[in-house]
Figure (cartoon, rainbow over the protein chains, first blue to last red):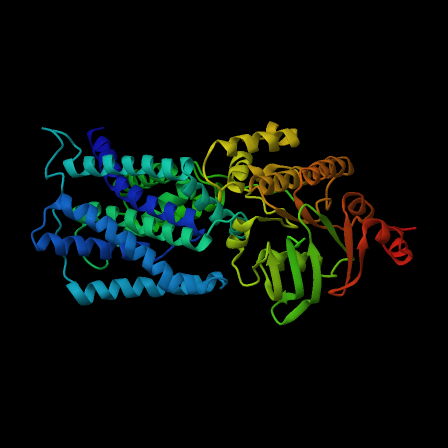
Length: 292
Length: 236
């Protein structure tokens, strides 16, 4: 029993990381109707920028908003420079550009900061949340930040005009143009927001898994799994999906002896495939119905 | 009086192929013009060229301003609403959200709510389905929604692409009653319609399109009594 509780708490800790990344995935999906494979690498790059500022001695809570803002700008600029010229191109062209962005950010980080593993401090402090607690201070901090992000994102997408414009542009770009929505600018805004959320995820994850150019590889995969499980259109679904994937991962790791450390990654893929087979709209995703 | 929409030498098409070859026509303020013709005559291409969603050449003036190089979103903001042939429903969004999107380019004020009420009065069936996902509406209801969304833009010109297509006859009647009311309110319309008899009831003037060219134009009465039109399009 004791062990099960420990596993569950561990799962929630890991899951909150995936949830954070899944949010960023949902954001980009809502904006452009695509998944961006370079999402994780962009988040990793933002985290390196944060690390650099920390090295220069700036206080954490000055760096945090500055990096979020800078990441928004990077995301916006990437859309303008690399995605905008592709308008009208096929899905495959987009995929190729996503892969290119992936290796550009990955190599750039390695080139600038080296491939060695670096540690990033937690803004919430080390150790358990309280005497004897199973949940660490940092894990609790991640959970709180993730929940705040979900609420903010939900309000933005559901209750603001810009959020509605963004969902409309993703749902039917041509109709969005015909009602006067500048679809391309809205897409760039979505890239900026997804990149900013990714930066938050990166900065929160780095204290746990350490900073190196390959850090986001598995996190993004789990983030995708969480987002797909939650239904790609729902921020709340993404968080529930991320947490579920985290708990599932820890339980399988603990109770299915063959899996262990080595076979953890396929769990994420198995989740994605299972969801797509049995419930493509996930927990809270919208089933899109189109009568003709 | 200067016309609201002035089209000169309009060619349009997809890829290398021109579907339209040098159209000239005008639509006056508050006037309703029908573009008639068989399948593939270029009617839909003409509307797409006007709203900027397909390649086009030639001169298009709206209220005296050249719009033949403008982006679709800019043209929409000038006051041209396009109800496309596929109805352009935002399928994953609710009926209410679809209506709100029509008003996206307007200032966010109380007049939007008033207009939404007016649209829901015009199409009571939409009121019953306000919270419903728009993709679940029937074809006729989606057509109503598309027209309502266009009205939410407070346009000066509405481009209508086959509002009767794939819609049950009783619903077609309702839709055309609403179009007649829109006409009375003084909004200009350019109507593409295969149902020639229905179109001629609503319009002031009509142009007949064949293979991308206007081969006949005149008042609705003249077109309706033309022997060729009667034989080919009205079944007399």
